Amino acid sequence: MDHVLWEEITSTREQLRDQYWDYWVSENVFSYQWWILIAVNVGCIVLWRFYIDRSRLFEVLTAGFLVVVITTVLDTVLIQYVFTSYPISPTPLSPSFFVSTYLVLPVIYMWIYQRFSTWKRYLTALLAASFVSAYIGEGILRVLHIYDYIHWKSFYSLLVFTAIGVIVKLTMIGWRAFEKS
Image 1 (tube, rainbow, N blue to C red):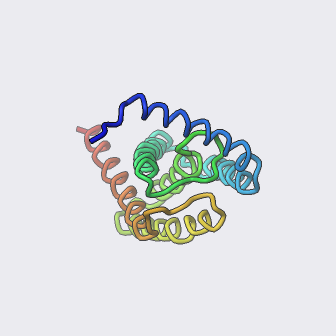
Image 2: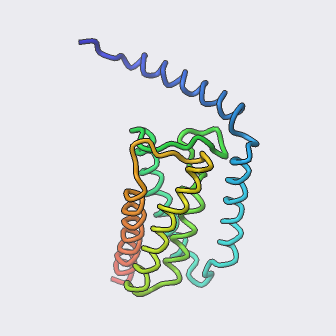
Image 3: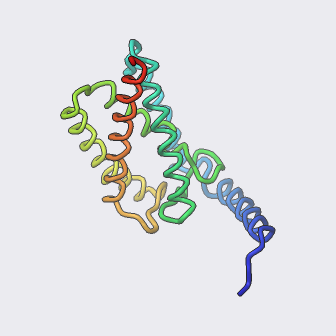
């Protein structure tokens, strides 16, 4: 049995990096999908600026950063193991995190976290946002060829989006309890 040497893996990764750069420059940057991503990201920053609860800024930002950490790990795994991909990216980085990971999802989760304090209302809003994100948001991104499912389904995204929200809420409750003890 042939063993792949680390040098071969490194060489293949270098080739992939160069191919991705060529693809990004020729097919990606300044495409209409690229402009849509730029507009959505800027829109999220503007919405966040106007709707953030400044009296709970540190707490809400902590929840948002927790979302960034979780979604970064998940995106990395999903892309590494070829479950999903981002054919269009605002940056030449692969995997592309600026499609939803660093702005869109954290803003959604921060808004839900700051707006709905009881579990019942929080879960209702979370399930609604998870459904819209998984079936409508990702559906639009797939139609626009910004995001692709390879070995993935919208239902999996629904479960993941919901789990992220539950984890964030439980973690924040735990941290607040720890802080008061």
